[in-house]
Length: 184
Image 1 (cartoon, rainbow, N blue to C red):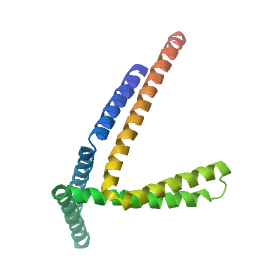
Image 2: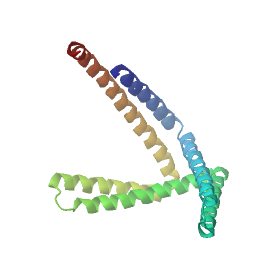
Image 3: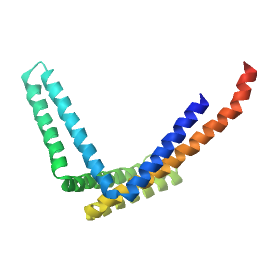
Image 4: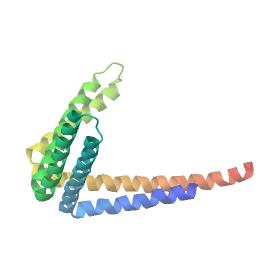
């Protein structure tokens, strides 16, 4: 069991590193992939809204779900037809999210029962998030490339951590295997 788990973790880690390298080497491809992924998500949302509309027993929800389905369909089509502006809008959404999340983190720092160290970390993380959001929104074109590069870097770091975890699981399995054999 440990060997198959460790092999899975190691293979996922290698795959993550490869995806990270691709994202860093070709950030424009990564941005386009995110836009296409958004379009696919919108199309799936449109289909689900249509299903909900036709499974409703009353007319009111039918109209609402059909309208939401049309909005989702339009968003998917727009994303595929105009990927550049869609990427910029996605960057602005991430920027807004980062500013709001940062403000919430700074607010959470002043919650009751937090130690000084925890409070400082919340404030620092919140300020970094706010700064990140401001930088993204000030230059969304550069922000899109930055997001792609950050995604690549994060994915590579995550891949290395999965490989390390896989090696540790394998090492644990080797240590426990003789003990389990003796217990049986």
